Length: 333
Ligand code: NDP
Image 1 (tube, rainbow, N blue to C red):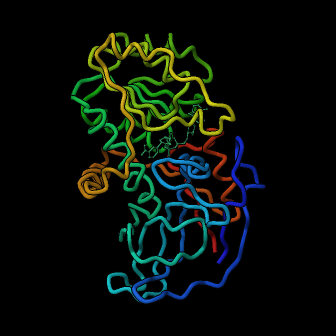
Image 2: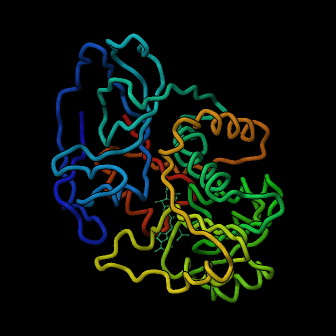
């Protein structure tokens, strides 16, 4: 059982020195437990936060601990009454080849030729739940509104934009590079895309959303958030989903300068953590699966083949913007 453990807390971008590679015997399941052979590991920007010491919405990964990760795989041994050998499951199994589990927080999944296992880490997994509850509940989206989403060609952002289109909204995506911008407009049906690496975002946003923004779904924070705040309409909702532009910052980044726009526009800005909606995952899962089956929602997974030893390198792709859609490491055996 190959594993990747946190060897030290990173400063800035996590280099190879922060990971320790260990090998142990494949676990035997204790009473009431089962063992999963992991086939797919989800790469999430939030992992960078879990590596930091200090208080957050989940405890940090401790030094020496197997790196926390959502993953999916097959049950290969079981002493648990609800999980049988051959069941395909997803859960927080960590960056390793095999995980032992008591079943808490584990979902059984039913991949098919049309809906492969990686989709359960994407639109049908935490990514999709984040888009759904962030947009519909926190963002309180109404039909016909104007929605702007950053990180728009990423896992969450690409789903947010599609869900807003399903609700008849005007959707503007902000993403890095011409390929990503072309994908979200030509394939996903966004009304406009802004390439923040090449364009003046402020000008481009004024042109793409001339009447202002009702919902700004923020995945990146920093300067782009500040610009979006200058374009919000009266009663707008600014959804703080993430702030990837700051995750590797070595100094405390300056806060948004334009927050007084919230007062002027009687708007609100609200952060959320998807786990708070766990009681309603089934509702969102049904809705998303339905739209997927109808072809009204597309799940794109950026699947990298490798071993757990590649985890550290693959994680960095998120911070370099090298992924389009949901980044997944598929373990070759
Ligand atoms: P993505 O698939 O969107 O991958 C990250 C993307 O962020 C990259 O592809 C890159 O795209 C962009 N990016 C990287 N660095 C920067 C930067 N400095 N400035 C602007 N953009 C940057 O990841 P996810 O969809 O999984 O996550 C998106 C956001 O949602 C993250 O902030 C994450 O923390 C958050 N999240 C929050 C949850 C919650 O419960 N609140 C749950 C899940 C995710 P590009 O090429 O366009 O720059």
